[in-house]
Image (cartoon, rainbow, N blue to C red):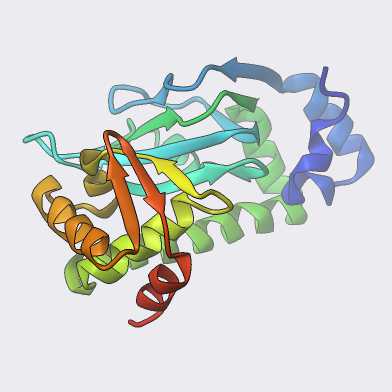
Length: 220
């Protein structure tokens, strides 16, 4: 049972107590299992959601089926794409998938509109999220257009393997993360394995030499 979810988020924790109490009354709690589609291209959002617990992967796919991961929503954050589509009353042009079991706080659009209009702290929270996510997306574009694949892959392995000695990921999943072809990822991973940085088995990658991977990731 979530007693006061407004404490979890910077934008709501800074609001006056009376406003937070009103939010608790109008918002609802939604839970979804890992692998569930949180939103998709056919949906037009009518609510803003705050991710209380878990992680969501936001990606976009081409007509040919090629996928690129745009960003992730972590606990304590809102989804900026949901905000943008809700304000413009347009359908999503991307898909959100729960990477873990998630708990989300769903805030109806009328309550969101009132908060943005009346509360400066909440308005700053929304615009700050926009700014951070825009920078993230520009990095994705820069990486896809100009980044060296070995450096980008090393960076991604460190992110996915944070605190772990082994990660669970296929070559296709890594290719989707980086917006490239599976064959390219396979070739680079084979090179990493020859250099003793990783070991591979079906669907798993052991990070044998994180120091070497980190040196490569920081070499750009």
